[in-house]
Length: 159
Length: 346
Image 1: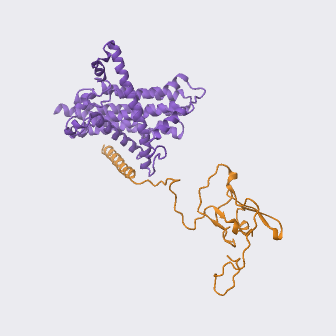
Image 2 (image 1 turned 60 degrees about the vertical axis):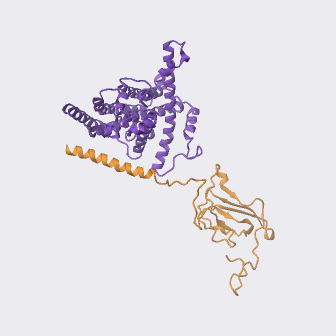
Image 3 (image 1 turned 30 degrees about the horizontal axis):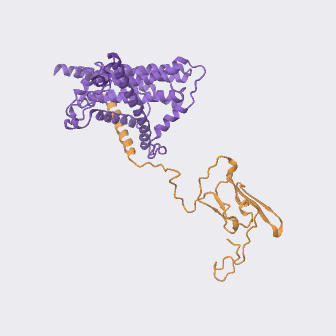
């Protein structure tokens, strides 16, 4: 009999405690972030979508070789002096955003941007073409960084 | 009230008595229907916003200029435009009329709700009894929906739902009996007027009747299938449930019926225990209109019902039956006995 009454008391007490907690949450600010209007402020080294600054690209193919998923497609045409880069594409179906392509780049033309929300309806749209028509790859001038270090002759090719 | 207004004005002088009466009744019905529809719209948004904030999220924010205020309108348009799918082997008469029965059972309860001193749909002397009787019609609707759906999960959910509702009607009615004993009438107007005056004269502040109020509140949660007793509905989230085969407007009717029933039981609780249209302070009674106070109190009760939804876990069906027959019913009977003895002795 006493247990019966105690059970009832415990039930009502626990319901009261639960209700206090829930009521507390009613008046707290929600943690939701209203997406298109509010966005995260990203850290500086955030690895978003890869961006290639084509005018500075030397078509050395180091990024394509470094990529673990083989998602960078580069096509070259011509020989010798007439070498042109016909296609530079990154396939985001395969990209794992590891930023290994950015490290070997001699001119730092490939970087990780802060973009993260490029959703598409068709998978083909996730292959980003950076080159419309064949371009001449960048030729690194000899004295690119004259103020790099005092006295030492730097080759503009070193990153 | 309406009838006298209609008769008093000389407009319908040439009409026979029964026509004026009919027109008055029709206008009351239309008014109540509009009220029910508005209330349900408000409740559906309020439920989603309250649920949202209690779960550290916003509710609907997008529709409408500010915090999703036009979301219910969008919901209604969606329900109207949805395709009405009827499975092949449903029991057509049962399946088609079940949502209407569910909604009607809930809507019939609105007729006796005492909004203010003269503001009742019909001044029934058996008001309270009528309210409980009509809320039982919802059970018939649930069983019709479950059987007619030709779906064993729907039938299973409907049977559990029916068992739950009819079991909990017993403590519901018994919890209200001491109040009837003290007031001496089933008429809602009389019950409310017995609580006029100061706040402490409300029935809920009498210690024994407070227990009655708690029992009534718990039983009313089970009547309207709200958490922690929402087995018929939750089965619709998990497996099926009695309203699985309904789409579009039929489902909207079931939903309307559920929210309307929630308001009815909340209002009965307010009228019987919490003072009805009396604010607790006589000075305020003269200034603030009765219906406003009544609706405000009923909305507070509905808010508590919604609050409990996100506080308590759902009960299993055997725990539910256990609660009813082993805890609520003995408590209600003890309370009835005690109150009766006290009234005889003192």
